[in-house]
Amino acid sequence: MRNPLAVRASPLEGEGIPREIYVRPYLLAISASAFIGGTLSLPSFQRTYGLDAASDSMKANLSSNIVSTFQGGAFFRCASSFLVAERFGRCPTLILAAITFSIGAALQMIGRLDFLYVGRALTGWGVGSSAMILPIYVSECSPALIRGRLVGTFEVMLQAALVCGFWVNYGVNKNISPEGNMQWHVPVAVQFVPAGLLVIFMIPMIESPRWLVLKGKLQDARKNISWVRNLPQDHAYVDREMSMIEVAIEHEISSTGQKGNWR
Image (cartoon, one colour):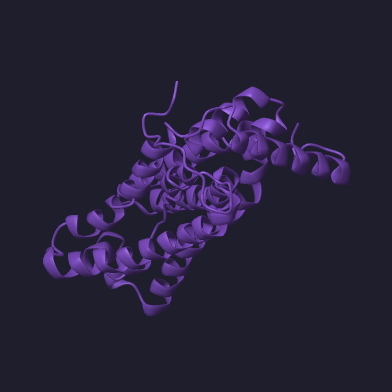
């Protein structure tokens, strides 16, 4: 069955590459990110965690611990997520990252320091995993001619999320009373938005064709290339891309002696 979003095939002049393959991959460049720096300075947050009565050195220590806990979670997950993605696939790894991120965000809203540390570590875990696997997934599902553009779009969106984090904290500081917890709950709750979007968009997405070829699932790989390119499975472009993936993997096996990292 043809993809309902597909449009009539029409090769680009001089290239022999169908125009349809450029449509769908832009849906893949979606990212999640977290922000904490502005939240630490909110009066309501400082009151909840006792920072308003703490010494300058204690404030500095607590702030650095909160930030470094996130970075530690991101580091360790980034170092291990590729192995998980090689074993179980790109899509399940990304969905798990978003769910872990959401759990971490929920723990941060409880208002206790121990839960805050655990929540920050879990959100770091989610960000580290998505930051590692999303560019790989995008590149493996993208046409070669726009692969760099799409991976660059991921980085642009990541930086845009950080800018949005600043303005969210600025807005709540100016417009929400510091007397209650709502002032710092809002910027923490905003973290659910990118995580939720990542889950929603990843559930209907196809698995990486390259990963499927690595696992010997050639028919599934062909089907997914056909879907993401909006072309029939017997189209010459699909045949050519399948051949390119198989040649690349054969070269990888001949060079390293194994298929990926985990069998």
